[in-house]
Length: 203
Image (cartoon, rainbow, N blue to C red; front, side, top):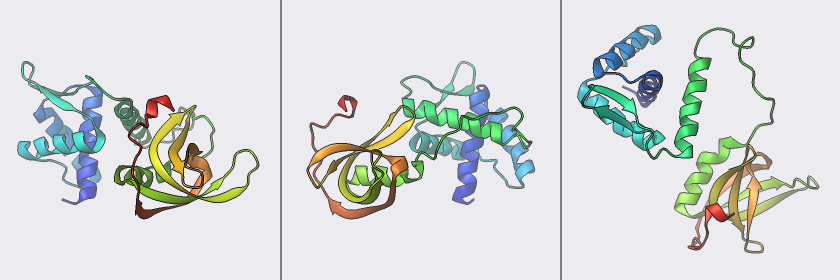
């Protein structure tokens, strides 16, 4: 089975348990039904299913547990992070999109500009690996575009906009750069030493 099919299977497992806790046989039947619809075999053995739960935990930080007394699996909300809650919300929205009919008469989204989230995965890799980045940045005030080199420290959302917090190598000051004004992102491979006193919660 391809990685794409595995990811799709994880999606179906999460969707099923987002609606209601379920036994393995109920999850299996749900996967079998969607296999018939999609023309792909999503059904798995119980051993593979256990591996799927570990993959889901690692990929999405969604903890699926087993209730021995009722013999059902459920999504644990204990110690659930904000990131996990956002992921679960995204699954709910995707589930609505997959209803297979025109939704414009029932589903209305707030009009907003692109948020630059296409660069998030690359930025997170650079943050984890402590590698400098370069990018073109358009200033909010005067609209002038400049090329920046920075040491990324973290990503933060504020008022529905995402920012990368980074030390600008030009003046060594920690600044916030809005992702929707950032493009031509490049990870240089040049390592930097992260400031141990930097605290995301204080910025």
